[in-house]
Image (cartoon, rainbow, N blue to C red; front, side):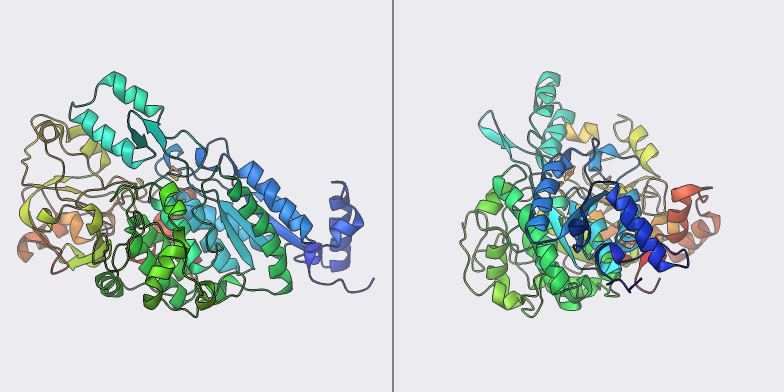
Length: 565
Ligand code: FES
């Protein structure tokens, strides 16, 4: 038998010690699915299917996949969808973050093990897109990302509602006693009324914009609403592009570079985007051996204005951002701050993609001369409480709290938080700082989005809207407040956060980028001598995470999955 071309089904044949037989067997089994020889001779586009009855954000995945298949077939390829893990933010215990690396591992393994010449990655909800980009970066096969797109906001009593900034806003009012049981139940059914990802600049939308900036999503496609017909046309185009990538390959390693990662950081800052996106971008970059330095983040933040006026920090929703011009308009506005030599999946340099000014609606995408804020949305803090850094989304915080020295009220973990936060006897005042420890990536909690600690009910009922809250976990990209997150090293890794006790004083200075624990060294030494690391889980994924997961400043990837292992 003659040597088969190493493309399509001839790629990655099973290893029986007889490659011709392996291909013969593969073709005969493929024929049992009714494909003609002509189809089986075509180049193969694998389509990552993350549709799941557990994932509302991926409700449209079946019709998106049909549209991708149409594009692949029209361009001369054979489309082969295959399932991978689907992660829906509110559906997973203890938190979807605990499984992001599992989804990345699953996707990378299937991209490399199965025969395909290119791939279309279909995902949308918060952790899915980062997992797919991490996988593509490691597998390094030509790939296009297709996001499911954001949901539409719902008119409601003279305002609009969408997941999930409005969920948090109304829940806070309910906790404060300002919204009735009946009203909160009615709102529950109006917050997410169409298919798609959360309708604000939360993590999913931020990651879609970052994927677009990196070049893995074609420019203009990231923010198309989930239910718009253009979303299906984008899917068809993704299928066609994947086939073109087979003839003229552009690999993720050529797209995800130091320059494109820095562009993505700029965009994250200009969006006032999700804090989670920083962890995810760090993990994606880590797959290509690119390190994100938090000092560099601060330098970029000081020279990047927030230009996008969307919830959770502003007023608009994702549909407004898209109709205001979306990423083409934002990148045009930022063009002198960007590396224009970066290429996308078509191989086109950013300079060429930004050759013409894009349409822009200034209500949602501001000009540089009139920014929402003259400096970027995120800032990294360092100090004795966070030697390797912590993150504050200053665009979502209360400036009056930026320079704070205060007494702490400390919660040992999520159970302690739930047990005591609303206790009328809790010793807490309006000038205190709330601290949550033992909720970082190494803990069984898996670094949940619990950093948005609720305001203690007795303070909320007295009208308190914000206070400084510090933790080693994350917060939802849809949340707001003076929330210091990702304290690194985390408490479970023996970071200084492990030693803090209620009544200790801390000092936060956004101006100086500092977060310090004001406790004498000898006191801390005594506490450290009494500290014990948490027990390691006995088996399974939890055990692997506990042994392998990296800290927030390294993207919380598993050590073995980073470039070079
Ligand atoms: Fe899926 Fe918000 S829950 S994007």
